[in-house]
Image 1 (cartoon, helix red, strand yellow):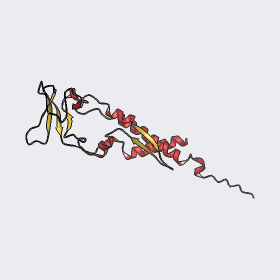
Image 2 (image 1 turned 45 degrees about the vertical axis):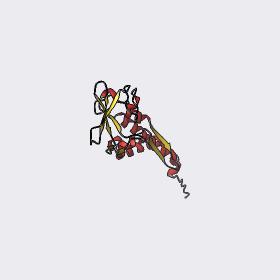
Image 3 (image 1 turned 180 degrees about the vertical axis):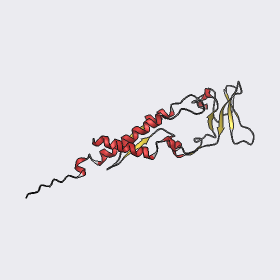
Image 4 (image 1 turned 60 degrees about the vertical axis):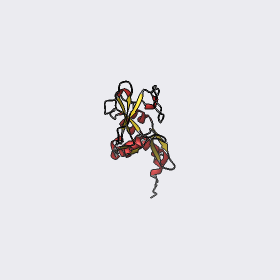
Length: 184
């Protein structure tokens, strides 16, 4: 009796590893985009800056070498929200300006006419600095009305927020779904 043996390996049936890795990463990428778009708007009642929508638009798949691929979120600050950390002023800055009034949300103090960081105040200035004695923080106020517009602080510490991304199980499921779509 003659026997015929047909040997088929899994590798013969599946696409190359890099295709599977990229398919899994695309599944994860799609999940992250949906998750970021669904994040709530600003909690303090200020107008939406579109930050999370911009973050969703910055998600991309980066092919790796061999059987790897990565999902990258290039929007500045997303990693800080996810991992936590401390923000300090840039070189030459003495404090961070945090908006206190919805009318100035999204507007930097340097965008005000007549505002010159580090210069002596002049009569043309729209904003003036108010720094209480022995205080770690100060304020920028509107010169004409005296309204406090910005809180000035030396640094801000952001607590880690793991809800910025989907949970690990959801990410794994999305990767598996992406791979299953690629082999179907």
